[in-house]
Image (cartoon, rainbow, N blue to C red; front, side, top):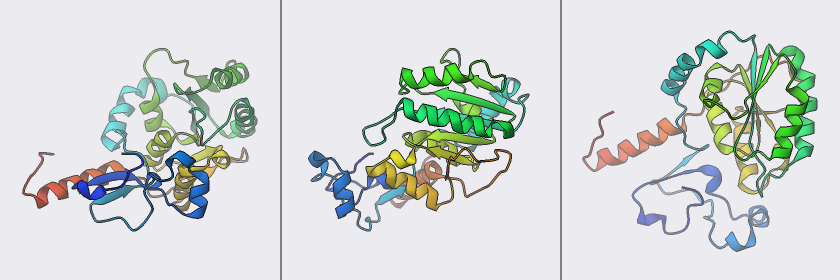
Length: 252
């Protein structure tokens, strides 16, 4: 759940991302919209029945990625390596951007293109048309770059399975959480534009070594690693423990 409110003792178990369990510090107060301030849960050490995950829960676990690798093998396996996947979300009230970020991203991608074998770019439903048009105009005729236009099967899971590295806009907690599950290099663009809980989430990923800012000076062929996020499995484990304490079991 997002923004867990007061009276969490009414529940036997609460699972929520850590950045949604937001602090009521003076700094936090200034970033929280005034009409929400009285409702946001203070960040105190949570009770034992409150489980805080690093990122969002999702379906991109190892089994799902193995399946996606098989499904997308014929299309993605033959691509020149390293394969850089670029996932573009859309601006939010706490992570604002527009054509300016698209132009910045283009300049950075052109700088690293020499080190890429292939680049695959995907837009989300939230991506503004003005952003997608700028990128399409720049890269649609580049032989190294493929841009998914929204037609046909969504390659997102295939990209997670086959990519060697990712560039992801800072607005999307879900896309970042999924990419950081792979243990592959994840570069973030636009984190400096984020405020409130989005900035808190970015900070937690950087401290874990899971993401680095995208600067346009990278050699994409140089890999680096970190401990992959495993939030969904860990949350499921907590649910099963809570059930077991009550004498219940779930067939795995």
